[in-house]
Length: 267
Image (cartoon, rainbow, N blue to C red):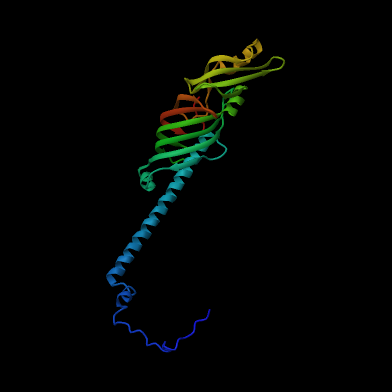
């Protein structure tokens, strides 16, 4: 709808008079900073740049330390891929200056087994090291104290024992299935525990399905009678406990004065 001009409305309006100084307050914010304020801004900017630069340099040092530690671990444990390594604490530069890293976390996968008739690789190995010192050689490292967890998948355990191993119905136990031609299938339940020499023992074997005929008994004795050694654990670590989980067997280790170097694995 159109709006028509009424006759009584003026065709010309006087411009609105602005009070003097009305915009003086706003204009004040647009004025350039004073010399003192300018010096303060420059000082803050310089300090910020210095701090950011320090963080970047420290991060570069941490990355180099992580890379050296990963190389030492890979050389010592013979893994196909270098592990992931994280150096804790800030700044790292001061830790390096003291020659000791406060705490380092390492996660490695598929640690191969060596020197055993029943090779049992470690599916996943997580290691926490306190007081890690590195020598001049990148393939040699020492830690004041260590806690580690070796996870063994049931697939790897099955391959090592030549049995089909799965989680048991009771806590702390596993099931092992045997299949023999003409004799059918048989399943036993066994408790898992830590044995001396960094070995995993299978004890209290019970038949839960089928009949324990002589061929099956011989197979089970060969697989379960003697504890299985973990010969791919860093030297100085000792097995403290073993737990059967839904997806595998978890072995907990602790140690003092642990060394990572080529061939330095527990026997």
